[in-house]
Image 1 (cartoon, helix red, strand yellow):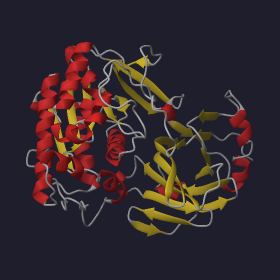
Image 2 (image 1 turned 180 degrees about the vertical axis):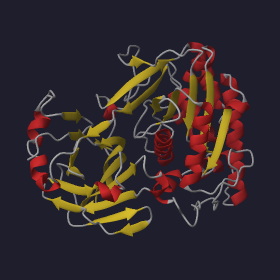
Image 3 (image 1 turned 90 degrees about the vertical axis):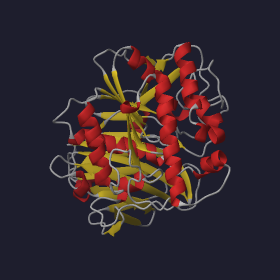
Image 4 (image 1 turned 60 degrees about the vertical axis):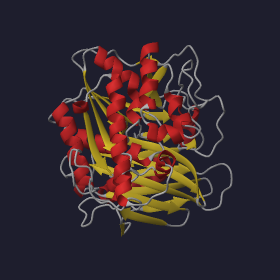
Length: 468
């Protein structure tokens, strides 16, 4: 008999919903918490997926940290060499030659050096890793212990091509990225890390967050745990209005304006805001095609926030799935949490996903949309980590499921769904996933997307689930 099981309810944001034009415009007053003040003892690491993300998301923070006497270092996951549209607008010509993509990456590196010098940083404070723009999530998901490294479809490059970068000619595989990430963190030993958001719709932004999480776990015995400040750049219909509006503040996207993410903000002085604007202008290769978007972030504040961690305690046999999920609607209706129920509620829009642990089996229940759709299906990512097994050897599980079937992938390979099952009715889909399939993890990084036919409907960012 199950006496106590943790349920976690995650409301999925409707990614296809229309967004009010004024969303994110902000106001002169704000009830958001403030980013804690910087001191001369701080060591601040800014992790940027591409050159320009650090200026868009953290230019004010960078200036304030330096003014307080803190040490600041910036690390770029990619050189941003895959943005073909920006290249065409910037160079006013079309090209698909390998050397031209490398040239574009070098252009963006030089832009970053110039932009950061305006904020007070020197070139020695910048670390470029040079991994493939628009390819790092595929590397995280599929290229570990790989006989062949990832090869970018557009650039046709399979190793770091930039001689000035940290690991010139390092193959595009997960081990290379993780090694560099751990070196950056262990060498600098930051106590504060600003990183791209796990709910960002850009795959490189999500990948950087994931690599950071794995690196920090690997280094947890060697360095104190830093405080993490994720910054959001890409979210459907946000921020509004577009273009340069220094008189406005950023507000969290409408889909995140609740207690699922604890947001904080940094308020820029007029001088810091002007220097931020000038730093963004340094990225001419990007502003000529997307300035209306980049300048939308030059406002009175910068936003930071992450999902709360989830902890599941497994009790009872997995066969009692119906017992585990009984009373779910009642618990959802309750507005408070009791110690006996041990229920965590995390609102996130329409629809809901719930997680529970029964024995050594992870249970995932997905409510279907209220509107009838053709061929409702889900894609679920499950990345586990264990202190006993290197992450490179841990399974990288992706599950494709609908009402009638499921497929399991470990990286690129289809695997047998041993012990994995699916139950479906008119209202929900329930997956049962043995922890052994995930390599017996101590924590899991998971994300999900739902579909109606081939069209994506809802999505949630990566959440960290501790299992006991």
